[in-house]
Amino acid sequence: MTYSFLRLAAEALRGQTGWTPAWRDPEPKAEYDALVVGGGGHGLATAYYLAREHGITNVAVLEKGWIGSGNAGRNTTIIRSNYLLPGNEAFYEHSMKLWEGLEQDLNYNAMVSQRGVLNLVNSDAARDAAARRGNAMRLHGVDAELLDADGVRAMVPYLDFDNARFPIKGGLLQRRGGTARHDAVVWGFARAADRRGVDIVQNCEVTGIRVSNGRVMGVETTRGFIGAGKVGLAVAGNSSRLAGMAGMRLPIESHVLQAFVSEAIKPLIDCVITFGAGHFYISQSDKGGLVFGGDIDGYNSYAQRGGLPLVEDVMEAFMALLPLAGRLRVLRSWGGIMDMSMDGSPIIDRSPIEGLYLNTGWCYGGFKATPASGWCFAWTMAKDEAHPLNAAMRLDRFASGALIDEKGAGPYPNKH
Amino acid sequence: MRIPCPHCGERGHEEFAYYGAADPRRPDADAPLEAWHDYVYLRDNPAGPHRELWQHVHGCRRWLEVTRDTRSHAIAAARDVAARGTA
Ligand SMILES: Cc1cc2nc3c(=O)[nH]c(=O)nc-3n(C[C@H](O)[C@H](O)[C@H](O)COP(=O)(O)OP(=O)(O)OC[C@H]3O[C@@H](n4cnc5c(N)ncnc54)[C@H](O)[C@@H]3O)c2cc1C
Ligand SMILES: [Zn+2]
Image (cartoon, chains in turn brown, blue):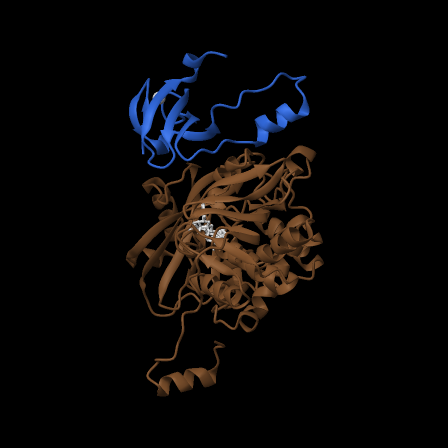
């Protein structure tokens, strides 16, 4: 069923009785041409682009819980393409371009809002770094504007500009950045993939990967064995567990990242603001809540909840940036398990096992990548080779030395 | 999460700095590249008991090997790294 204004009007007149489920709930078949493990944004986007771009429609997405129950449904929804390094920037810009046409493409309202992402700078050195990053973006044809303190003040006058420790000296603005509704992205890709024949199989946990003579044969699941010549893993924080089922160890640690939402207030923040002096980012949801977060807790974790020291750290940054935070109540906090890679950048690649493909290492920035990740992973699975956009996101870069380390932090996942 | 330091007693984890997995052992200087790649980059990253290194930076400053379940954060053991020898 195609969604349109006409359909909406017709359903209003019929008492909303004609809507059908947005995707089917099929029993898994015994065999598919390709399987995607993980019903987050990346897995669903991969299945969609396999069908749309490569005509591979005999595909199932296997999800252990319900789709969007992982990080796709837990993130702070920021989308941007303000990366520094060549191996990353073209990829994230491709993602931004896909976001810009996504709703028409999927026939689904993903509430993509290009409200601008403003990265504040609090020192001269930070301004130099922002200028460098902005120039790198512009060399890739991406929009970036360096604002001085007055420029920032004109946009967001309520910040603590003259904070004694962290005076705000300016910012790097990407106007095309912004937010998208995370659940709607999941549902939109699921529905669009389903309409092209993809089976979305929920409550189906992969418990083993069958490999024979170095070739993948299919997966063991809680709903039986499912055969396929191609299996793509897009399981975010669970990547090491799945790779382990095929005897592989990955350059990945799993860490918890928390996020928070305040009580709803009148419209205040109409863009995304990030604090330069600490790790902190904030935007306002359409319901009025301030959505914000900071660093990962910093130790390996598979518990989808974090600790209080990090909560304190985030609230301190919030207060330093926006003293009005002191009058706000926090409604909820939650956590998700991040696939932190050894250089802070993702992996979209084949694996040493024929027919088994890896999509992992998203750290805390994979939501913005959702469309391009699916697009590139589908390409890699369909053609058995990387697209130029993900050519640098190789698994063997840790052996070859061609790392993509935006921060220059070294092989310490909790420092990226 | 509270870590039982063998020297200082049970302390909040914010007093400690986290390093990562304790199991990877530094290869010999002339070990093949593959051994170094494993040591520097590859991790077991288990969902379950995990031996890991924490330094009690705001306490005795000793490095500890802590065995913690990464699903529940329950800590089964904590000892000074000196106690584990060089094996
Ligand atoms: C608090 C928080 C804030 C974030 N903020 C941002 C942000 O502002 N901007 C941004 O770009 N990114 C952000 N991220 C990161 C982003 O959410 C992730 O990088 C991205 O969602 C990961 O891809 P995914 O959607 O496919 O992952 P997920 O949604 O986690 O999908 C993986 C799926 O695999 C399933 N799975 C796992 N094991 C199995 C198995 N054995 N069998 C079957 N299925 C399995 C899981 O149930 C899960 O549904 C944030 C993350 C968190 C937690
Ligand atoms: Zn101590």
